[in-house]
Length: 147
Image (cartoon, rainbow, N blue to C red; front, side, top):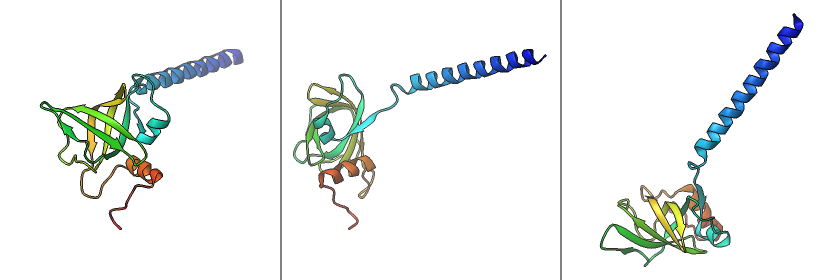
């Protein structure tokens, strides 16, 4: 009798381990395209992303670089005070998007240009995404609007 209970217990443990491994594999497969790492322009200058990698780029829209085309294509540069990356976006920009303001874009590099599929801008006068603040503080460019 004991050997039958022991066999059953081992079978249950093996089945649970296989189910756990399967669950972890499915979660990993589901997240493989869903995780977009944040990078600042300075980080991109130090270590460029791999070809085809989708990531988020954030910083301030550099003054004097915003060029609106005849269609919905917009070109501008994003800076964190240390480096500047040219950006191209086709679509409708958020209402609060402007030069000198914080933004985060999701997309990939095509040559030396970041081609964004989505652009997010700050939503009021004092808000800036945490990642952008951190990268601006690293470069010594951040000014606290509340002080």
